[in-house]
Amino acid sequence: MTMPDTDDLEEKLLSEVGDLMSREIRTVAADATLREASGLMGKYNVGSLLVVGGGQYLGILTDTDLARKGLAQGVNPEKDRVQSLMSSPIITIDIHRLVEEARALMKGKGIRHLAVTEEGKIVGIISLGDLIRYYAATFKMTE
Image 1: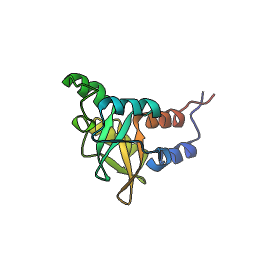
Image 2 (image 1 turned 120 degrees about the vertical axis):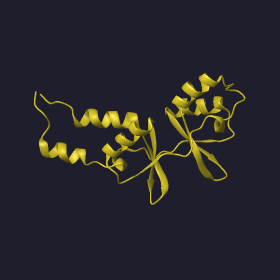
Image 3 (image 1 turned 90 degrees about the horizontal axis):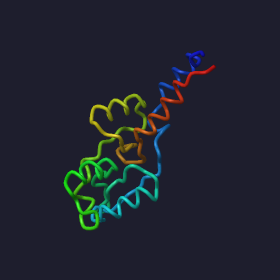
Image 4 (image 1 turned 45 degrees about the vertical axis):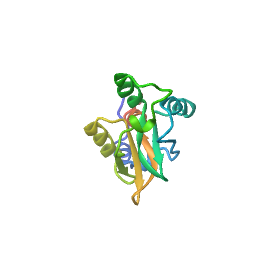
């Protein structure tokens, strides 16, 4: 087995967040029930939803919020609202930052999703899963 070509590896390590992020931003209303939010995550096969209210992004709700915070607090998914569990403020990273910076930010904050911004506006989402796929492909050993 050999390592990937050094020049190719160096180029991949300089990849920007914008190369990996999803531009499909899935949202949920702040006053939606947790059951509705969970249904949207399942429907779209995503682990996070940006929370909207009053025409702006208010926070983020993740599958981890539902599982850890929701279960720990004994929420009622039929009655309790997204705003009761969402994380705010939204942690963001600029679209032109390096993928390694996104990894470090996620690790430092203990989170799995970042909103990606361009000129201060949210334009996408990058997740821990995106990073894992990226690193797996980048460091894949060749025969």
